[in-house]
Length: 88
Image 1 (cartoon, rainbow, N blue to C red):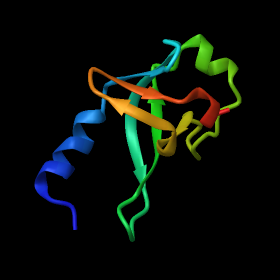
Image 2 (cartoon, helix red, strand yellow):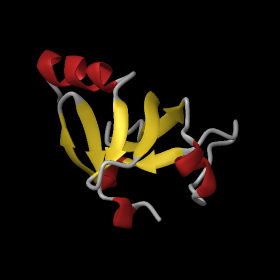
Image 3 (cartoon, rainbow, N blue to C red):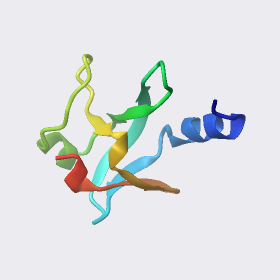
């Protein structure tokens, strides 16, 4: 079971800018999608998607929001850094 620090950490991702290793900006983390049974993070929903991310054929939620697979995340800090090759 996740401790309080892990729960707080996931909330801190909301609003962070998502960028690729090469510095291409995708947008911001709008929400997190997780597996209810296991608590595993599956996707990050993009908000304020950039024109670059709009051109990519990203998976979309039922509501039409772009989804970034959480498995593509390689680092977090001031930004959420993703491996672009794991997304497209």
